[in-house]
Length: 290
Image (cartoon, rainbow, N blue to C red; front, top):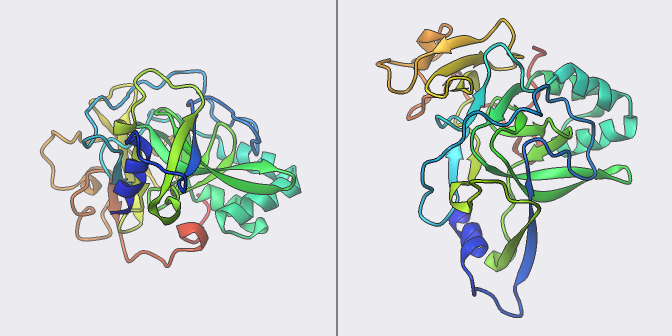
């Protein structure tokens, strides 16, 4: 299994040899702007520590891969956006070179960046997540592996994958695999309290596009918030049943379902219709402006 092979390289001491390749994975605190950022922070609550953190044990000694619709992966505060999307659009638009580099990393045309960003949903990670981040240097985006701390504000696509880190405006994509199964990773940066590779998740795309995200209410971690895809978190948020509450599907509590029911085996999104063919870097084509 791909995820397991990467993780074993990360956590097993003594594995190695003269032919092994060591790669870096950066630890990024939820409010750290980092180096080579695309923009300044568009997270209005970056100074507030995350209110909810996953404390459950990991899957053995390795990070786990989760669908983006897994319950407890994302969180939010009702009626408060995790990221100011219009500000992000303005900052990129003011620097055409950055806008172009962002577009290349995101897999869209430069002119489509505003529409693409408006199609994403502002949420917060409720678990530490491993991603491919992209810094900006000398007119181009370059990729690097990173672990984002729980509480990090991100913009999430319709397949529930984080695509932008709001503390720096950097485009995100899914984690890379190790070369030839022999690479090893070393972490750099400051570890935060509670950090453990065993509680780091790798987000996999949902099986179908999500119409409504049901996420942890960070002000009341036992509750859930329903936020429409592309919704900025103002007047569109609704209260959703918690996982323990009897319910036949989260869609019926938030908006009419357009399919026969929620995504099988999840409690965090309602899906409708077949998924569109993914674009570059596994991204679906931008949806309509929110």
